[in-house]
Length: 224
Image 1: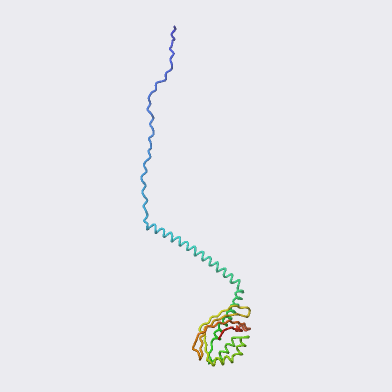
Image 2 (image 1 turned 180 degrees about the horizontal axis):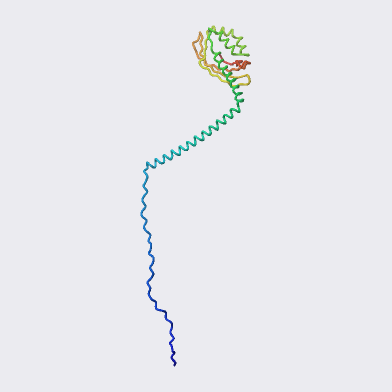
């Protein structure tokens, strides 16, 4: 048996030498958070004062805005009113004339209410003259034709009367004719009865004359 010149062997790994592990980075542990400092509380009075000031400031601003808007609206309304008046000058003039006529009729009715309820047996002529001067038409004629008999009756009992309270108003105006109503509270007396008080109602028709006067053309009354 032949012996090989060189013995066949399996290759061996080189021997390993121990090496220390590389140093690891230091672990960074989270640092504890320092406790937060408590926010100092504002005194209650300071807070209330601040709130009040804010409210007053807001109110002042709102008031200023309101006043400005109101001023603007008033100016606009005034301008519109002036334009309206300028555009209606003629109409206002016509209305003014109509109002003056109505006031004349009303004044005539109220004056007649006082005239017809004011008399004294010592001066009946003056009384009848005033009533006839303030009347016209059919009522004027009827009162004039009965004047003598009325005078005798009033003289015989020594009649007196004066108004204590009067109320009158227009019910309608149609062209030159006006209707009026009146209420008069009279204090009356005669030689057979003491002074008494009588409330009398009257319905009057007035006619406008060519000179602008309003005269009573008809009257309905229970008594004078």
